[in-house]
Length: 132
Length: 220
Image (tube, rainbow over all chains, first blue to last red; front, side, top):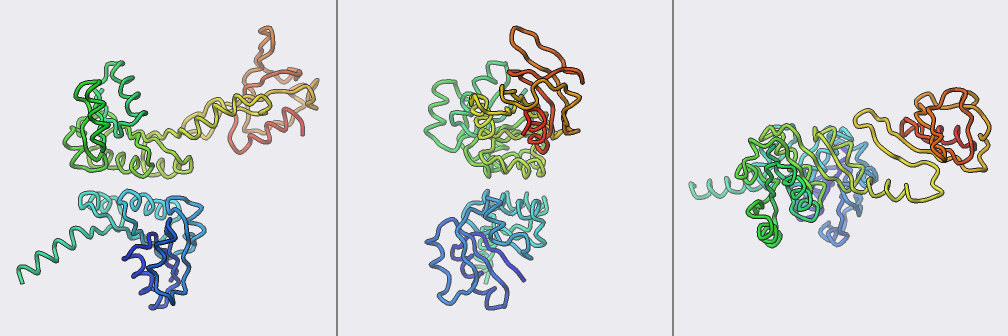
């Protein structure tokens, strides 16, 4: 599959490496070249400098042919907007985005975005730890 | 009307002042404590500190009974989210978003934001109008129709001078509305109207046929 990942933070970089070793074609997009240091030295996918809210940058990253798009920047609103560009302008079949704010995650889930809130999930894990 | 303004920067501040002046009930939601303080010191308690993209904040300021929400922060993504939360969580009937990147207009429209205002476009048009040699000036977009009203100036060297409108091959999407001439000899053009040097022609057209219209009126 062709996969585009926006945001080369810890999660983005790790996901890129894993998907690549699964045999997918991976492009990582970030607006700060320094973030690409997190990619493993043997990463053979594409690392592209650009703003994921800019349609031109997304096109360069191959969004038009992508089978899946992961949106993993630090900003909830950036993620929400990029995910909706991918879904509604470029019709990417699978768009998955991170939204830290649980309320916003809930709202966008009902609006049809595949949104994951790490806040909710992590809190749940911690709670389960305590309950043993 | 009850209007919630998200973003208390220069635009939000002046907008609020104007809306209050028209007798509306207005509330600003602003992230920065300093800006909030300054606004409240001057206009009374009308600025609430908080994130206008958060449902909790919007609930607190009574967005549920708002007739309109206007998002005028400096970030397109924040304005989009504030409007979407207002629309889908609080069923606000009318949402208006400021956009910086004119490209985003299509996306915002698709996502149900009622009105987008692009400062970039407006400034661009205003400057265009002031460039004396600019052949075609945008005067007005006719909202939601894909049509616009433009002005075309006929310079003395145009090859169309002396020709009548009938002889011009105007694109079919374009309609000439008015010819403005010196000394108030303005006229509504008919097929017999003859193009003169210095004419300013007001026309209805589409962005796609702009260039064809310009060519037809001024010659290549």
